[in-house]
Each structure stands twice: as C-alpha cells, then as structure tokens.
Image 1 (cartoon, protein in one colour):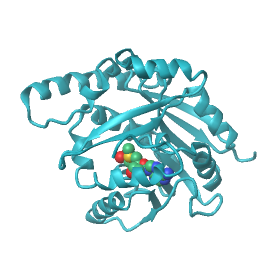
Image 2 (cartoon, helix red, strand yellow):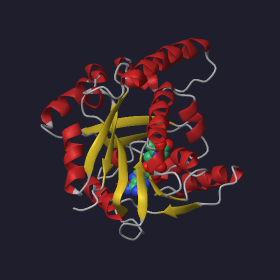
Image 3 (cartoon, helix red, strand yellow):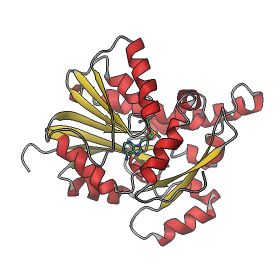
Image 4 (spheres, helix red, strand yellow):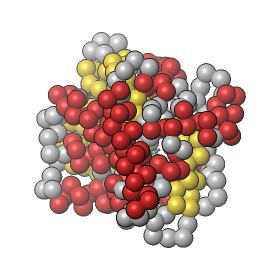
Length: 290
Ligand SMILES: C[S@@+](CC[C@H](N)C(=O)[O-])C[C@H]1O[C@@H](n2cnc3c(N)ncnc32)[C@H](O)[C@@H]1O
C-alpha cells in the first residue's frame, strides 16, 4: 500500500498491514535493537506498577501479539486484550494458551469505542505506541479513562515529537517546527520479512505537555514519566529497526545500539528524559473523587 491517509479509514489500513505481519511480528521485535531497547523499559515499567495490576482486571489496548498481555496474564485476575488486528490477537491467544493461562478475553475492536462498562477495569495499558496510530486519539484516551475505575491506573506509551534523531530527518524536523505546541506526523516504513512488500505507517507524535493535557482532559492525573531511546536516538532510526539476523556486521552494530539502550534505561526516570527521547511513557491515576 502507498502512504496511508491518517483519517477515517486509517484503522482498516492499519489492521490489514498488521495482520500481514502476524507471523513475523515477534521475530522482528525480538531481533531488532530498537525493540529490544523498547521492551526493556516497558517490561520494567509494568513490573514497577505490579501492585496496581496483580490480582486485578487489566485492559491491554492495542494488545497485538500479546507482549504485554503475556506479562499480565500469569498474575492478573483477568486480562482483556483488545486490538483491531484479528490475526495478531490469534497469535496472542496461542501464546497465552501455551502458557496455560485461561484468564484472558480477546476482543477484536477499536480503542475509540471500548465494549466495556464504565469503571470496570483496574489497570489500562496502552503500550507499543498504539495511541500514535489512532486519528481520534482524544476519543481513545477518553474511553480508557471511562472504563478505568476511580483509583485505577491508565498508562500510555507514545512517540515524542522531539528527539535527537530529528537531526537526521530534516523533513520531519521541519514538520515538527511547523506544528507549534503539539506533535506532528511521523512516517515509519516497515519492510516485511516474508514478502516483497513495504508499508508506510503514519504515527502521530506528541509533546509531553500535549499528552498530559489529553490525559487531564479525560479526568486523569499524571503520576510518573519515563523516557525511552534518548541516547540511542543518535543512531538514525532506520538503522535501529533494520532486521538482518545473524549478519556479523549488523550484529556488532546492534550491540552498540543495545548498549546505548542500557544507558537509556539507567536514565529513563530522570526529570526531562520523557521530553527528549524518541518515545515516552506516562502513568496516570484516576482520582478517587473527581
Ligand atoms: C506497534 S503495535 C503494538 C502491539 C503491542 N502492544 C506491542 O507492544 O507489541 C500497534 C497495535 O495497535 C493496534 N491498533 C492500532 N489502532 C488501533 C485502534 N484504533 N484500536 C485498537 N487497536 C489498534 C494495531 O492493530 C497493532 O496491533
């Protein structure tokens, strides 16, 4: 497909593109420096919040092949794994079944219209930059806040507008400068491993202030901020997400990026880190009384 339109039909295009990725999604993520670094932070962030989801009801928005669902399932009371892409959910279902978890419900649907009751969930997780793929992101955040119970948590990972890698991307830098005060659109090109095909995804980026405003407008209060890919963004993004398993030159290169990612991991919670990395995580709480 050519460059998709970030509008009403974008969800269909996203689902189709991800469905075609179903058989290779996990291999790509596990073999790519960017995602090795990414999952180090997201896994640790969820472990740090374990007391808020262990033994409770968790909603995984944009669950994909179940990378976060698989972390929750053995210790949550129930996990609701929602995604537009049915083939990715099928992979997630196979994985949790292989681990013997029977507490996961898979929901094929749209984050902007969650098929759940108000205040029915203790912990909402939206990781893997799902929010960047949703044109009506404010509606998705409002939905996550609606289904979260007072005292519960909503945590969102998003692509940041500003990061040092923009120095390699004059087009994106110019767009970012033009979009004053809010995020811009980022194009991410994925080359399929198993078919002669590439796809451009449009991701909306956010400033930390913008995402905080969106969460606040939905009645949530930000309690924690983490940055991802701060130092590692020095390496141009296409080199971070290239997949060439087993090639010696590439493996050396990958080790350098993963080492930068370990340094990032040590810096993730520093004040300001969430503003300068390629991506960020915000953790927000729904106050007991609004
Ligand atoms: C980059 S993947 C992340 C999957 C998983 N959370 C992870 O970290 O591996 C983005 C996911 O968002 C899903 N997605 C995009 N738009 C969505 C929407 N409007 N509602 C539900 N899921 C959506 C896609 O189908 C895809 O599975």
